Image (tube, rainbow, N blue to C red; front, side):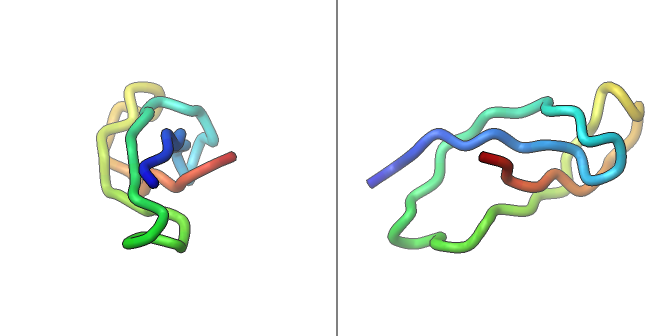
Length: 49
C-alpha cells in the first residue's frame, strides 16, 4: 500500500525530496514544511506525480 512520492517546492517548483506514503491513510496529496536547497529557506513542499 505504500508508494514512493516526490515533493516539489511550492515557490521555485524544484523537486528536492522523495518520500513514502501510505495511500490508505493519506489519500490526498502530501504537503510538508521542509528546507529547499534551491531557495535556501524553509518552504512548503507539495507532492507531485
